[in-house]
Image (cartoon, rainbow, N blue to C red; front, side, top):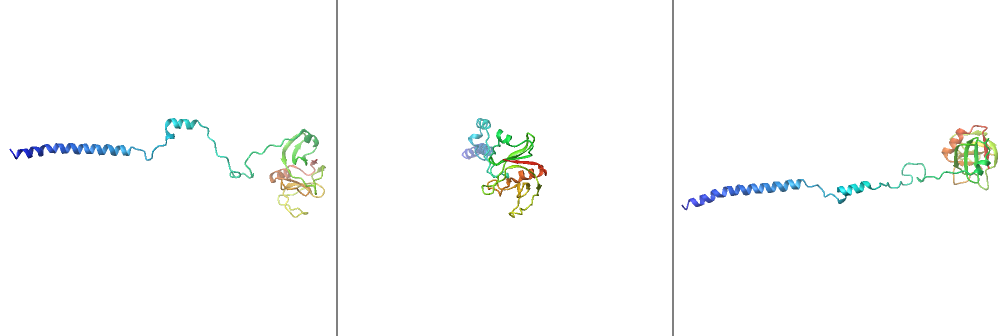
Length: 205
């Protein structure tokens, strides 16, 4: 009888051990699965469905472009205000003229009859010491992109000579007065050179 009690206790301990092992396995397995299903990093509050819907309804505003960052040749990316010609300026340039230059307003344009075909665009005339002559002239001759002034030894690309003394439309600074000529941007000077034939009338007032 004394020998049967330890044997019975040992027999009862086997299923108890098995139950404990099974419970331990289930607990570890559940914790492992729960840990594996967690996100790698906590989601921000704004990623909730309500926050996402609110964010999608807000306007999207891009950052302002840095001047020149877009590769534009202009020094400033802001829009340039268009030049509006007054009725007086239009009246002072006769319909017979192909090119008009308003020295006071620092603008010039090309026209065909009463219709403006190019411009008006900004220009820089001669200064007080060497003013651009006023009057009605005609294109005498034209030079190319690499022409050098024989009077001053400086490049004057796409020159269109229309008055005595070497006065011409040509590429030049729009902030520095010329020696009697009319400065234009490179693009405008080239356009004038290509679209003003020899003999075309030029009105400067």
